Length: 82
Image 1: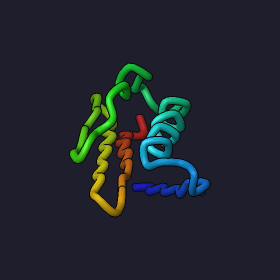
Image 2 (image 1 turned 30 degrees about the horizontal axis):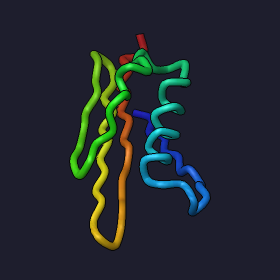
Image 3 (image 1 turned 135 degrees about the vertical axis):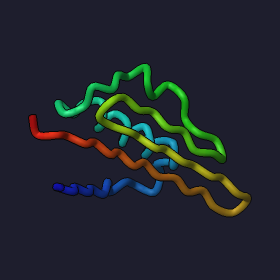
């Protein structure tokens, strides 16, 4: 199994939501995904959302507290190689 990871450098002026939208745009723009832009219309608020199809799962989470904000996106795609 091949694993791939990427980190996005982002100016401090970007919010967590901005970075999550950037990650979603990157996934949608990939030639390897069958997910569609409408799959990512909602962003999580102090929760986690999952979007999936037969071959891939995108999990997005975000939490905002009084003194910090954090979020992340995980995209898993499984291919049989066929």
